[in-house]
Figure (cartoon, one colour):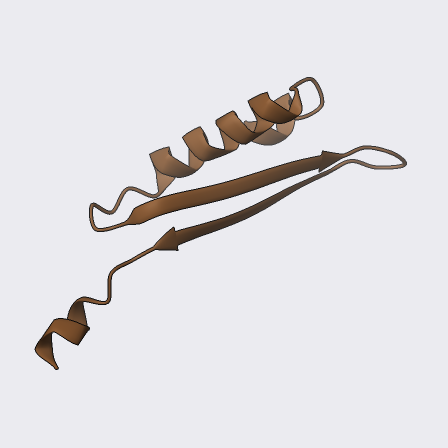
Length: 64
């Protein structure tokens, strides 16, 4: 979906859609601070690049 929209989306729309799609797919309840960055480049070919990170608490540290 994101790759089909990337050519016509603004940078802001691309970011918003990338985060929306990520949150639909990745839904664990213990995560915080989801960050997704998206980029689109066109030229001889096109490329959509996504980077994401999620803070997950280290639950096992409570046992130490």
